[in-house]
Image (cartoon, rainbow over all chains, first blue to last red):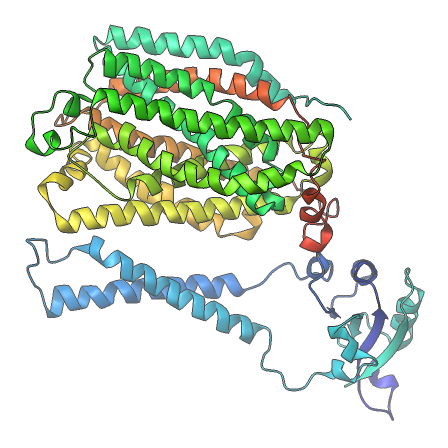
Length: 185
Length: 411
């Protein structure tokens, strides 16, 4: 539907600007209730409840962590098992060759190592980083998103997006945004 | 402002039933241990219940001291619960007296290994392990704890009635000393009362494990109590699902600590395989029940609650979190059973079924009396320290704990 702007640059979305965290939280809730899903908010600090208000309930990240943790556990355990039982079976203090309690510290360490690194990198990957360019930097006043301004952007890829209706919806919101403007791609 | 707290129905029921259940439980434990022809059983069972209930009082005392050091949002919501638990210390103190009269003075065999020593190693330790010195130390520990508890509760009551905010400075000044005193006295108390049952054996993990166990038990019980108390004023205006989330996270952390300490204690002793140490684990794996308990502790005290408590949605749902807290509490009871019962039955390979029955009766009995007294103490002050100036900073939305925005769900 963003074809309505045939001549100008492609539109990324319509953004509402606020100077109050509660206002942007309320706007996000109203937009979600209106049926908008492809939207995001930008704020200088974490606003409590904003992620939930935008509908970001679930993340796939724990599955990455679990898979990596299990891989780490298997790696740590097998590393020692292969070394101590297959390659160099040694009698140490009369203990059995397969003395598995001894393996647990390294198994645990490997689990944590794999899980922690994977969680970190998977988080970066799932966030779409590194991202050298983002259309939001074209938004008016956006450099203030790191100090004292709060933005809610409804993106054109949303199924409900309509250049006129979405703009009108944002303008009619209570509390009223400081400004509503179009962001080009 | 009303100066009293009313108990919600379920806790009111516990308070009403407490003395009756308590008397019945203790009487049953006493009768059964005579019926089984083993009077020592009653004292062992009293000691077992004492260890757990004393842990609740002292774990709470440690958290009160930490609370006054940090003034965190998580500890403000439970401050009154912790304080009421510390004021319940007279009950474990009486239980300790029963155990003392029955075993140390009564000539029973709980501390026989050093009261009537026959091994050379133990004889070398008699300058520390003898009844007069041991008794004096026990009196000293209780004196220190009662002093700390007296003053921190007195100041808390003064702050409540006078609203003089300067009292919080006293809290801040004395809390660090109290915490150091707790760690030192609890270390020596754990060695005196618990570890000296097997005086040849030693483990530097014993005292840290005792602190951690007390903390974990206290967190589990506090979670259950907060779930009951969350709709009582003035707590209901401030308590938030985030607080339950924090208690879930703490339980997870303490479970990992418990596992780390228990396992490293085992690993060092098992790999060293020295005669004076290894008997601790030989005595704890010489029958089917103990071997089953080892498995239960590995899976039930570590793996299951750890995996479950890693999940955010379980910690943010009060109902599911309460089930986890129940489970953790049950595992604590099993773990303490595993600490002491094999020591009482040194060298005996039969399964102590009779002990389990008497222990259960004693725990329900003393637990009933304990919680009756505790709930009475809990009603004496409002559930939040509204006169503490630090409360508003701790519970303000800027700290990520916005009141009233999101209500704990009961799915």
